[in-house]
Length: 229
Image (cartoon, rainbow, N blue to C red; front, side, top):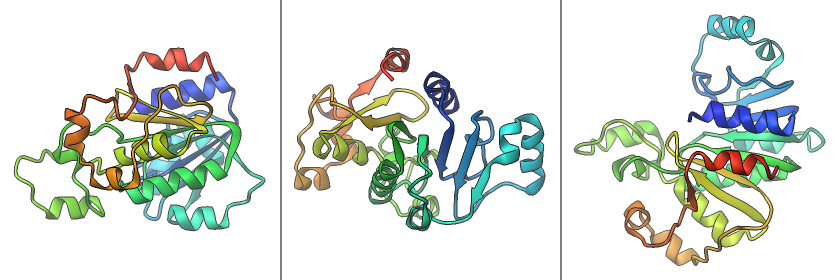
């Protein structure tokens, strides 16, 4: 199941009206989404004006979409607190620090029953989870055997939220490089990692650990989740 499928199913079930996407890049996730109001944020959009017009004709929701050319931090610093979002997709800089900041900022701008979807929460292998400050930085590391897939250490944000935010329901769907789901609610399974433990953790610990650090769920769990929102 692709991220666009998951996002759209959540939007449809909630009858959501406002959608936020952090890290639009080439628009592959943003353009197909159907919702009344869409806001895309990226400091460097990677699509042409022609492609944007083409998608506006294929999906009329894009004709009224907002494109904010800014970093996520700058966007949230200037965001109108009245205009909250129902569903958000976070796929910005793939670092633990920035993905966590994006989640926390989004939570502050989310409606009470809003849902956040995060990409890259379950890297396909250890090299894809290599910490780096950007994709180019990961490329420059020239890691032997790396296949070009880079998720960074976004997975740590899931572990942090599960350990430190007991007011949130957090799990990861096992599809499309791991789709993290975050919303207000009671956690279904506790995780209690200390800051020191989390700082020292590597993705090998996740893969080899007996504990389900990511609260990983089969992709079909989405349909069970949808019945609760």
